[in-house]
Amino acid sequence: MTMSNKSLTLIFLFIFASALSGADMQVVVKGGWGKNSDQLGIKFLAPGVLPTAPFMGVGGYEVDDEGRIFFSDSVNRQIKSYFKKEWRETFSNAEGLGEVCLFSGKLYVISRKPDGFIIFDTSAEKIEKMVKVPFKSPGRIAVANKNLVLIEELSGGLWLIENDKPRLHPAVALQACGNAEAVFGLQKDLLSENLQIIRAEISKEFQEPEVTNIVEVSVRKVFARLVGMFGNSPILATVAADQPEKIEFQRLGDPGLTISLPVLEGPYLMSSWKLCSDGQFYGFSGTASAGFQIIRSGKNFRP
Image 1 (tube, rainbow, N blue to C red):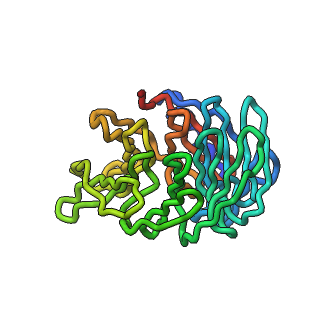
Image 2 (image 1 turned 45 degrees about the vertical axis):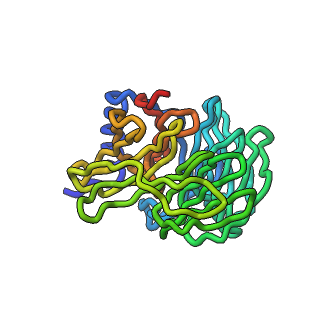
Image 3 (image 1 turned 90 degrees about the vertical axis):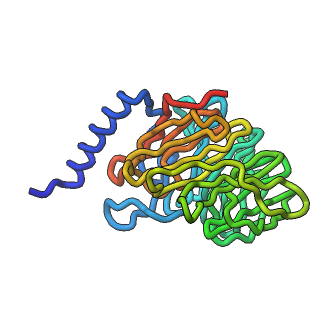
């Protein structure tokens, strides 16, 4: 007997609710797909099939120190926020909104057509300006300091936008992970398959990155990415081939600090979990019929 999509969804929600209660996690907001203020736009690949490509749903999300959650709604061309059970929205002229990050009260949002990023003032709730970047396939965005924005080129490479002027770093392994002193990247040792963390100082002249950490790999990794900074330490996220249901986050400055979280079902995002600006991990999950939810993990790195 074949089970209906509705039955499968109910089973998934029951199992997931049980996992939440057992893993010290909390749903902080949930909603449906659509055009309303409390909904996120989505383009289904087929009836009941979630999108698997960027700019067909939510582009990214962030959480500030006060607990406000920000979303880039690519389909509805909106920047949305949720705080104390209230939804707010600001329209954008960009056709596609992607990954986001917070820095000093400003939300930085990847945009397509025009290509570049939007700076959104979270206090005034208005778009401050648009900075053009000639990327091809943008991924994550991060702010290293008040004058330097980092944007990944998913085909390889890192854009450094300094004082609104973009340049592409020649080292293809660098990612949108860094601070005022340096940017970091990830590459694989072809002989051992160990992961090498590389570092390049931020300077006027380009330089070859140096290897700063080697993460030994005993089981093949099907996913590996630097997901940001915690203090001065890069955070590495990996998924092992023998445990595809689990994603592990390791604080490289403290090799003993590792957090394990479940891989969540949902539409296309670069990772189902994100270390947000308030220093806590949040996950985005959802199904085609039940909508979406943001989950806060009880597991977090501490300074």
